[in-house]
Image (cartoon, rainbow, N blue to C red; front, top):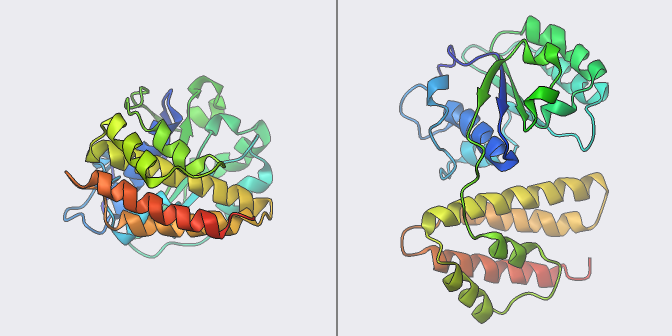
Length: 265
């Protein structure tokens, strides 16, 4: 992997949080993707790996890849949130291996947590990279901003009528019948490309719900875990031209079975 042109500290801003997350995932995936036949550089970060179903890209989208650490506090970052970063950088990486820290909501870094991180950014261990994501770059600590290369990406999200599909999976009400769900799909007139974008959004939503349930020691974590397993399995067979409606029907039918199994949680 060639990351020599990838900045050690990178601040990425956009008015759209979904675009930020997607961009960060693609950037990291472009460095590790198993199906890339050429060495990647930072200039390749715009290459989209969002539709790749290799094991590495799957784990990056699930924020479970071993060479990444994703941080996303509910409120301000605490010093305790930064300690795992510091401890990780104490480890010397094997040759040709790289590690990425991704700080979501970088504007939530407090003076104390930011200062705890400064020395590590100023004198970074070899082959460690720091990516800061924010929708409010002016609110990011000046001490952090000044040590980063700043990149701004287009903030306008793709116009996709996918909210109704997301709601069908996430609204805690009685499930739609397959007939009604099929009618919904036809009324939206989405294609396979739009379907993949909506599918990625669905995965991120359930990943967030699962993490929250685990943190709160909620029994709903079992339902979210089963749903994530279903989504990950479906990702191995992404929607193709002419087959996206069948893809959604199959996924929804399997999801309804899981929902019924865990309906009493």
